Length: 175
Image (cartoon, rainbow, N blue to C red; front, side):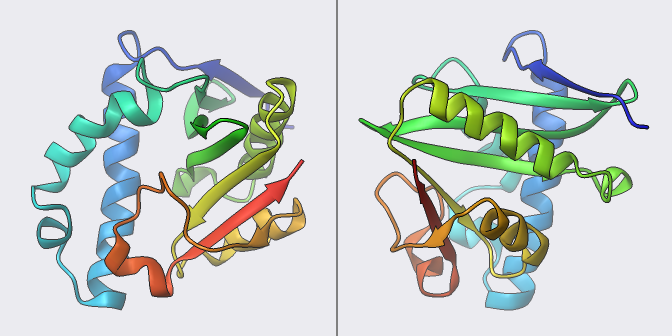
C-alpha cells in the first residue's frame, strides 16, 4: 500500500522542486504542442520555456495565488505529483498543473489529488471549478469526466494561449 502525503507547497521553501516539477510538466506539454500543432514553444510564449516557467511560478503556485493552494504529493516519501487551485474570478476556481511524474503513474495519485483539490474548492465556497487540458491528455480527460467535469467554452483567465483554444479542451464542474 502506497502512503500518500499532501504537502502544502511554500514558494520559498519548495522553490527548487516547484521549478523542476513545473519545468518537467511544461516541457512535456511543449513537446506535444510542437508535435501536434507544429508550434515551437518559444514562438508561442515569446520567450524560452524555462523563463516562462520561472516567471509564472508565483501566479500558479505561490504568493500571487488568490485564495488558492498548491500541493506537492509524496508517495512513500518521494515527491511524485503536484497540483493546485486558484481563484480566477469571484465564485470560480481553476485547477492548475495536476501532474504525476511518469514513474508514479498508475498509483491513483491524480485521482487522490483531484479529490483533495475539489474538497478545498468546496470548503472555500466556490460555485464552479474550471480547468483546461491538452488534447493529448487522455488519462486526465477520463479522470475529470469521472469526477463530473463537462466541456465548456474557453474561459477568461485560462493560461493556454488563444491560438490553441480551437483544439484545446476546457472543462467545468458546477458545485
